[in-house]
Length: 128
Image (cartoon, rainbow, N blue to C red):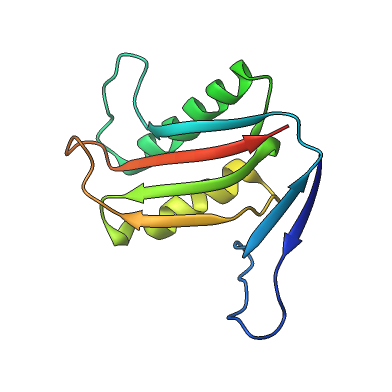
């Protein structure tokens, strides 16, 4: 699989250090579309703190990726659903921690989740 970052230098607002406009993927044989995943414990309970939910959501995503014989290196798209715009920076920090130096297209949307104790939901697309 070959990836190419697309960040036009003119005619569009600049990409930021944690953001790319687009990612072209060629030669991938498999794609994995992951449903919105919450920061829930294995019992289905949501911890009270955002930090715990952020740690769990990325642990849950890594578990799903492992089952598909993939890692966070295979993620090519991240969409975050936040219950409050004030948690955007902490969500960003958790994403950067989870992805390391990888930069993929991302979107963050402020929404009402299905349950009030779910503070974050993340869906990803991965390719291998």
